[in-house]
Length: 93
Figure (tube, rainbow, N blue to C red):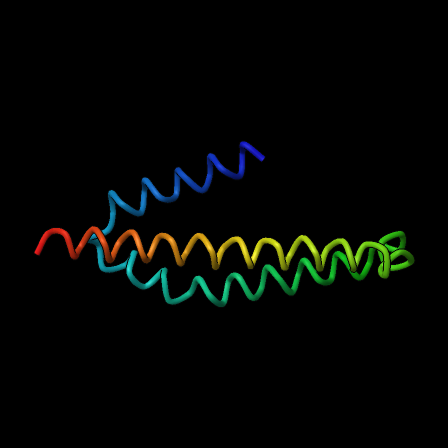
């Protein structure tokens, strides 16, 4: 888990340092396709796991609850972040 977070923050730092290079802007366009490819490969690995497929109804409900909670939490966080940002920008004028 910490390795993933480390790589995420390392990428953020490198992206920030290289933000004025044209090539870095082109990487953003490819990101969506890379994420789709990763999801496809992840789906294949889930489909190959016999134990997971045998218990898909049990795990599926838990996964759906976790996924919906994550989406709901993201929406709530985005709402408050947007509200805070608008309030911050409104205070400067």
